[in-house]
Length: 164
Ligand SMILES: [Cu+2]
Image 1 (cartoon, protein in one colour):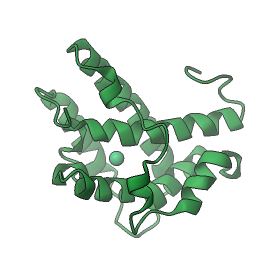
Image 2 (cartoon, rainbow, N blue to C red):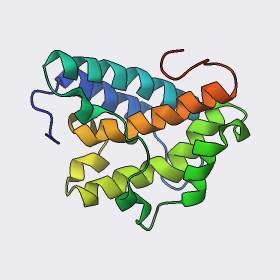
Image 3 (cartoon, protein in one colour):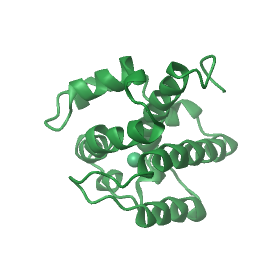
Protein backbone atom coordinates (compact mmCIF):
# COMPACT_ATOMS: atom_id res chain seq x y z
CA UNK A 1 0.00 0.00 0.00
CA UNK A 2 2.38 2.77 -1.04
CA UNK A 3 -0.50 5.25 -1.50
CA UNK A 4 -2.42 5.75 1.75
CA UNK A 5 -6.19 5.81 1.15
CA UNK A 6 -8.20 8.57 2.87
CA UNK A 7 -5.13 10.32 4.24
CA UNK A 8 -6.52 13.27 6.24
CA UNK A 9 -6.57 16.57 4.40
CA UNK A 10 -5.64 18.42 7.62
CA UNK A 11 -2.41 16.42 8.01
CA UNK A 12 -1.47 16.96 4.39
CA UNK A 13 -2.11 20.72 4.73
CA UNK A 14 -0.06 20.90 7.91
CA UNK A 15 3.04 19.47 6.24
CA UNK A 16 2.65 21.65 3.15
CA UNK A 17 2.21 24.82 5.20
CA UNK A 18 5.23 24.00 7.39
CA UNK A 19 7.50 23.52 4.39
CA UNK A 20 6.27 26.63 2.64
CA UNK A 21 6.89 28.65 5.83
CA UNK A 22 10.30 26.98 6.38
CA UNK A 23 11.57 27.01 2.83
CA UNK A 24 15.14 26.02 2.03
CA UNK A 25 16.57 27.08 -1.33
CA UNK A 26 18.11 23.91 -2.82
CA UNK A 27 21.89 23.96 -2.68
CA UNK A 28 22.04 26.65 0.00
CA UNK A 29 22.76 26.36 3.71
CA UNK A 30 19.55 26.44 5.75
CA UNK A 31 19.08 29.45 8.03
CA UNK A 32 19.99 29.04 11.71
CA UNK A 33 17.25 27.23 13.59
CA UNK A 34 15.94 25.42 10.53
CA UNK A 35 17.70 22.14 11.29
CA UNK A 36 16.28 21.89 14.78
CA UNK A 37 12.77 22.86 13.66
CA UNK A 38 12.98 20.36 10.81
CA UNK A 39 13.77 17.45 13.14
CA UNK A 40 11.29 18.44 15.85
CA UNK A 41 8.43 19.11 13.45
CA UNK A 42 8.86 15.83 11.60
CA UNK A 43 9.17 13.76 14.79
CA UNK A 44 5.89 15.09 16.04
CA UNK A 45 4.27 14.92 12.62
CA UNK A 46 5.16 11.32 11.81
CA UNK A 47 4.10 10.21 15.30
CA UNK A 48 0.64 11.66 14.79
CA UNK A 49 0.30 10.39 11.23
CA UNK A 50 1.45 6.89 12.26
CA UNK A 51 -1.08 6.98 15.09
CA UNK A 52 -3.84 7.81 12.61
CA UNK A 53 -2.55 5.06 10.30
CA UNK A 54 -2.77 2.43 13.05
CA UNK A 55 -6.22 3.65 14.07
CA UNK A 56 -7.41 2.81 10.54
CA UNK A 57 -6.36 -0.79 11.13
CA UNK A 58 -3.57 -0.56 8.55
CA UNK A 59 -0.37 -2.55 9.07
CA UNK A 60 2.00 -0.30 11.07
CA UNK A 61 5.10 -1.96 9.60
CA UNK A 62 4.29 -0.22 6.29
CA UNK A 63 4.99 3.19 7.83
CA UNK A 64 7.93 2.15 10.02
CA UNK A 65 11.31 3.81 9.52
CA UNK A 66 13.91 2.08 7.39
CA UNK A 67 16.28 0.26 9.78
CA UNK A 68 19.06 1.55 7.53
CA UNK A 69 19.45 3.18 4.11
CA UNK A 70 18.32 0.63 1.48
CA UNK A 71 20.97 -0.56 -0.97
CA UNK A 72 19.03 0.81 -3.95
CA UNK A 73 19.47 4.32 -2.50
CA UNK A 74 23.12 3.77 -1.71
CA UNK A 75 23.67 3.20 -5.41
CA UNK A 76 22.17 6.54 -6.50
CA UNK A 77 24.33 9.43 -7.71
CA UNK A 78 23.36 11.89 -4.99
CA UNK A 79 23.91 9.49 -2.10
CA UNK A 80 26.84 10.40 0.17
CA UNK A 81 28.20 7.40 2.10
CA UNK A 82 30.32 9.64 4.35
CA UNK A 83 27.25 11.64 5.36
CA UNK A 84 25.35 8.50 6.35
CA UNK A 85 28.37 7.16 8.25
CA UNK A 86 28.70 10.38 10.20
CA UNK A 87 25.07 10.65 11.34
CA UNK A 88 24.89 6.93 12.09
CA UNK A 89 28.21 6.34 13.84
CA UNK A 90 29.48 9.73 14.93
CA UNK A 91 26.45 11.72 16.08
CA UNK A 92 28.47 13.34 18.87
CA UNK A 93 30.36 15.23 16.15
CA UNK A 94 27.26 17.44 15.79
CA UNK A 95 27.39 19.93 18.63
CA UNK A 96 23.79 21.02 18.31
CA UNK A 97 20.53 19.55 17.13
CA UNK A 98 20.36 22.40 14.64
CA UNK A 99 23.69 21.35 13.12
CA UNK A 100 22.52 17.74 12.82
CA UNK A 101 19.21 18.75 11.23
CA UNK A 102 20.80 21.08 8.69
CA UNK A 103 23.36 18.45 7.76
CA UNK A 104 20.69 15.79 7.21
CA UNK A 105 18.58 18.24 5.22
CA UNK A 106 21.45 19.27 2.93
CA UNK A 107 23.29 16.00 2.52
CA UNK A 108 20.74 13.20 2.78
CA UNK A 109 17.08 14.15 3.01
CA UNK A 110 16.75 15.81 -0.40
CA UNK A 111 18.49 12.91 -2.09
CA UNK A 112 16.15 10.39 -0.45
CA UNK A 113 13.04 12.21 -1.65
CA UNK A 114 14.36 12.78 -5.15
CA UNK A 115 15.52 9.19 -5.55
CA UNK A 116 12.40 7.72 -3.91
CA UNK A 117 10.33 9.47 -6.56
CA UNK A 118 12.39 7.71 -9.24
CA UNK A 119 12.88 4.32 -7.60
CA UNK A 120 9.20 3.97 -6.65
CA UNK A 121 8.03 5.78 -9.77
CA UNK A 122 5.96 8.21 -7.70
CA UNK A 123 6.66 11.93 -8.33
CA UNK A 124 4.61 12.91 -5.26
CA UNK A 125 7.39 11.55 -3.04
CA UNK A 126 9.46 14.56 -4.11
CA UNK A 127 6.65 17.04 -3.56
CA UNK A 128 6.18 18.52 -0.06
CA UNK A 129 2.51 19.06 -0.82
CA UNK A 130 1.73 15.37 -1.28
CA UNK A 131 4.61 13.18 -0.02
CA UNK A 132 2.97 12.38 3.38
CA UNK A 133 0.18 10.42 1.72
CA UNK A 134 2.70 7.74 0.72
CA UNK A 135 4.07 5.08 3.07
CA UNK A 136 7.66 5.67 1.86
CA UNK A 137 7.57 9.14 3.41
CA UNK A 138 7.46 7.45 6.86
CA UNK A 139 10.16 4.94 5.94
CA UNK A 140 12.48 7.88 5.15
CA UNK A 141 11.48 10.14 8.03
CA UNK A 142 11.44 7.25 10.50
CA UNK A 143 15.11 6.62 9.75
CA UNK A 144 15.89 10.33 10.08
CA UNK A 145 14.11 10.25 13.43
CA UNK A 146 16.26 7.32 14.55
CA UNK A 147 19.35 9.39 13.69
CA UNK A 148 17.86 12.19 15.81
CA UNK A 149 17.36 9.70 18.67
CA UNK A 150 20.96 8.49 18.21
CA UNK A 151 22.17 12.07 18.58
CA UNK A 152 20.09 12.46 21.75
CA UNK A 153 21.61 9.30 23.21
CA UNK A 154 25.12 10.42 22.27
CA UNK A 155 24.56 13.65 24.21
CA UNK A 156 22.89 11.92 27.17
CA UNK A 157 19.48 13.38 26.38
CA UNK A 158 17.89 9.95 25.99
CA UNK A 159 18.81 6.95 28.08
CA UNK A 160 17.63 3.99 26.07
CA UNK A 161 16.24 3.02 22.69
CA UNK A 162 12.64 4.11 22.29
CA UNK A 163 11.04 6.83 24.36
CA UNK A 164 13.08 9.52 26.14
CU1 LIG B 1 11.05 14.65 3.94
